[in-house]
Length: 298
Ligand code: FAD
Image (cartoon, rainbow, N blue to C red):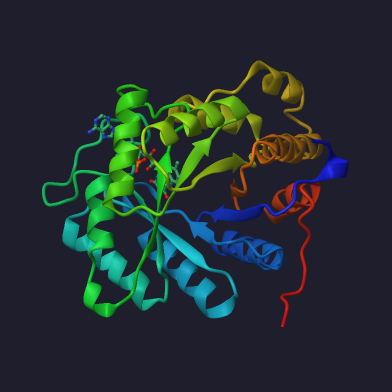
């Protein structure tokens, strides 16, 4: 597929992180406003390690409900909190009008790579959390949409593909509506994981997570921790560009659009972009894919 033949009927969603400072908050809201006219299926807001952004995540999704036409999805983890505390956050999301949760085990406070220990009164992991959200106050008649994480190249804690697929199937059986993947750069990593998942009876959508990180040194650090590989061709593309942010951004948008088009060519319709709160890169990637901002139809 070439740029002259952008894929038709693909849908995008965007991930943001909650800002730490007033300046970062202004930048996030500028990005949200610029991306709103692309009409994403939903926008998600991450939950900092160990619940460190609990209030900021809540404030961000609440403001999205109140001030935009976007459908926010709030991330939630089980780390360092009792079941009652975690479900208190679910309650707060519901009060704020948020009905989509990205339910995760989360990483230990020491960071990715450290061993996860459940809180003594907490959830043992993502599966119990998903079950609790799915069964939450059914009398209210509201159904949460639940997204979960999946790892085409295996999570660092993985005990092998077979066990990973059992875990993903258990997430589906517990009530997950969709999985969103960790980022990856080789289409085959995703496509072979998708095939294996379908063979294992996993039928929920598995939405590829597409990374828009133009800071290649930063990307190397995250990849080393989360188990995503950076192919040699990617190293070569960014080689010598440490001091050239402009070229790195152009490359990042093109790499993301190319990966998306290759997957769209194989029938994938939904894509989740890790925006890093930067609208420009997401907008140019979308434009390369034939998705332009438009006014909302009346
Ligand atoms: P799980 O899927 O429950 O477990 C992760 C992996 O551990 C499994 O795939 C499997 O390989 C292994 N494993 C788990 N249980 C078992 C078992 N019983 N037996 C054998 N192996 C097992 N982190 C945050 O802190 N905040 C966020 O907002 C956030 N958002 C994310 C969004 C996406 C789309 C993704 C992909 C990740 C996100 N993360 C976030 C990172 C995530 O919290 C970490 O990767 C965490 O280590 C695992 O969480 P999980 O829900 O994927 O766990």
